[in-house]
Length: 113
Image (cartoon, rainbow, N blue to C red):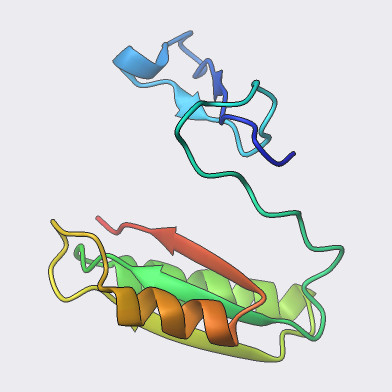
C-alpha cells in the first residue's frame, strides 16, 4: 500500500517494538508524513531482476546468498545484482542507489550477524 507505514507485531513473548517486537512485512498503517512511500508489490518474481544491498555486517553476504538460492528454487529470477555499502554506518552512495534503480525490478536490503 503506497504511503503506508510498517506496523509492528508482537513477538511470541508479547514484546513491543521498544522491547524487541518484530516489524510486519505488511504495510497496514496510515501514511507517514515526510517519509517515502512503498513501491507497488510485484505480481511475481518470475523474469525479474532482484537487487541486493548489503550493509557489510558479518555473515550478511552468506545470508543473502542463501536467501537468493531459495528464491531461485521457487521463482524464475532473471538476474541478481549484488551491491554493498563501503561503510556499514553510512547510507549507500548515490551511485549505488542509481545502479540498483536502473537495473532492478525489486531490491532487498538487510544486515548480517
